[in-house]
Image (cartoon, rainbow, N blue to C red):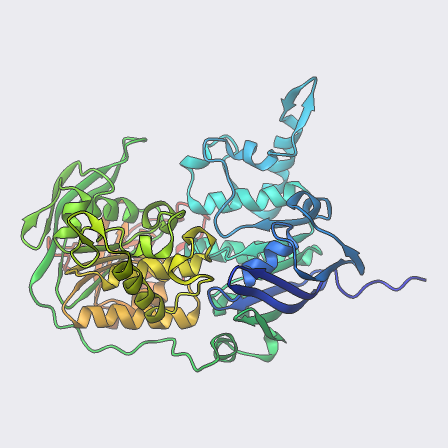
Length: 540
């Protein structure tokens, strides 16, 4: 009787080179049936490259891949799909103007007489949604659904093709805590059914919760593979970065100074749905303090920040920056008046992906006398400046300042933006999810730099879905629910479960025009969240 192979996937001595860098250096990886296997490493450690080799997006320069004990040659994603290997990419591969259903079946459509038929596909999708708890409107356009729903669409694409080896590349980087909890449950259910999962993540708590095994990469090399039951978050962090990591960055008490940002009775209307997404929001941010907007995604935080920074029009109200009304001023004027902005969507609003790093580093300052003279760019000075920030922010590149930004990992793209915005001369830093997609070492470093920015006298408006980040960095926490400020807290005097009640709309308090609390919270009859259906007592 033929012996059953021990591994469903085995990658042996995989080498992948790019100009100027070896991304994968003789890496070995084994995946068992029904196992959740985490892949951990710093930004640019080679995790996504390795998974792209397995999915057929890249061809290895050396090494071999085995499926069920037999060597396979995966020359394209079509080959991977034929072997029942699927992948959810860090940046989703969806056609925004197509419906959810059309995206799921794209490339695998049923047809009759030259016409695409969707009846069977729709029935199969509905069955999969019910089975795995992945509810999404199949008729909705992808451009109109939340990031969490887009990820569900990507997962359904894999399941629709009957994939049993599932690759998740940073699946929780853009999700709310409640969506993350749902995804963890879904992954465990899939593993129990015999599907095998490769899970790339920087979030150690998620790895400890959901993974059976963890392989750690550092600078393209495999540091080791360990069962999660035999380790802890601190050990994994040290394996990943090669040094001790501090999860909570110490900071002194805030010393607020002059008023820098004054948001007064702000209303914002969604230009597509014509619904008010921000309703009568008022608060102030002073120099030397970090004010954090917390809330479940989709409660108006994005629209609020877009209105403040100039990415969206204000229906009513005022935004005053350094005593100048900038409500209807251009983005360039706001930058000149002292605003730095780390945007929520780094690829859409933060970078020109086909520019190199040095071009992106000075994209808002190219008219500065340091980098140009009478309209002529000083390329030498620009490169020197870019090289300096690459070193300071530990940005991993293949060709230094000449590296095309699109070719970099998501975490290193984020570091480019963070470095540019923090180094720029500013009095207000608007930071939205500043550590999204960053490893624990980079998170520690960025948190230190944001606190140092505050201590130098900058006003910081932080928007984060990571409650641990909120509690670690904020001097004042404002909670948004359905477009309104429903709570104002000192992080020293509030717990995460208490914040969760306000985020879910179960409690609310009166807040004055300065963003200060006017009293205790009032209980409300709110049973569930907008997405995910979690009851209030389940909020963590």
